[in-house]
Image 1: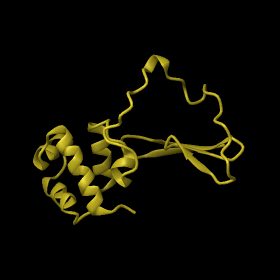
Image 2: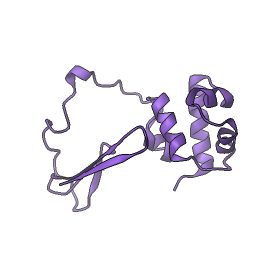
Image 3: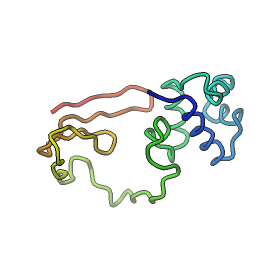
Image 4: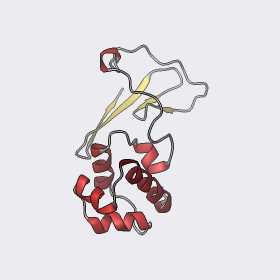
Length: 134
C-alpha cells in the first residue's frame, strides 16, 4: 500500500532534482495542477496514469523507488551501454535462489528455486501489460 505522505516527499525530491514547481510539473507531464497539489499535500494517492506519466517523462525515476522508496534516486550506477546489453532470452540462467520461495528479479521476472523462469510481465507505457507464463 502506498503511503501518501511518503509518496509526496519522493515526488518533491523529483521536482527539486529537476528544478520544477508543481505547476511546471503539471505542464511537463500534461496533468491537472490541482491533482498534483492534492498529491503533494498527501490528500490523494497517485493514479496509475499519473505514475506512468512521471516514469515516461523522467526515465531516471524508478517505479519501486517512486511508489515504495526502495532503491535510490537518482541511481548512482551508470546505465549499461546498449551495445553490451544481452537480451533476456540470450542470458544465462540465474543461479538458484537459496529458499523454495519465489523471488522477484529485475522487477519483472519471477524465478523458482530451481532457476527456471515462471513468468514474465511486460508493462507498456499506455498502462497495459502482458503476462507470459511458462
